[in-house]
Image (cartoon, rainbow, N blue to C red; front, side, top):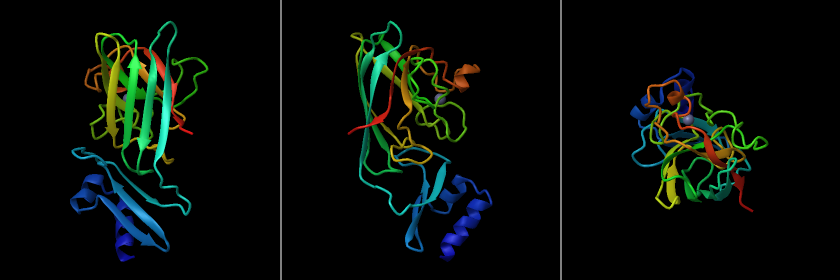
Amino acid sequence: MLTVLALCGLLASGVSGAALQAVGVRNALFELGNRPLIIKMFPAVENYQSDLYEVYAEPYTYDLRAISAVAVLQGEGENSVGGEILFLQRHPPTGPVLVKGNLTDLPAGKHGLHIYQSGDLRQGCEKLGAHFNPYLLQHGGPSDPLRHVGDLGNIEAGEDGSVEFNIVDPLLSLGGGPRSVVGRAIVVTSNPDDLGRGGTADSLTTGDSGKPLACGVIAYVR
Ligand SMILES: [Zn+2]
């Protein structure tokens, strides 16, 4: 109990995630009454550096079974881009999410892949708000320590317009909480994502990645 109180004091005083890492905390589990108190330091994936951390008490009825979701992508306007993107989180709510996609009819080359704030497709892929950004950070690449949670970087279509990809992402969650992406839209864009390094204003919000080519809502698998 003393340890818990000391850590709460550290967090309340605004100590950085890097400082917590320096004192050896990555994923810590404490008993608080009968409920576990979890302090999670990112990375959740090997070789991923981050200053983010979360502290939460596990609710009594948290379902810790694996969660699957799927987005069925449809082309914007005249685009015939299509396919499916599957999401799997083996250890919700904090474990990494596997993102496995298979898309066809894309222009050859690199295209940005982002999750947006909303999943409201009433006006197609155009009016979905901004990139999903619960921590209010700048746009970045998928392995940047600070980024939008929705920033999944680029996928690259071959000459035949198809692409298969497997991404393991440490920030997405399917299990509720601030990083949950279920109910939000995933979008493939016309241009490559410059990962926030383009030096333009758009680079720091969207990676200058152009217009949406296709989008779909991330939904639970039955
Ligand atoms: Zn972004």
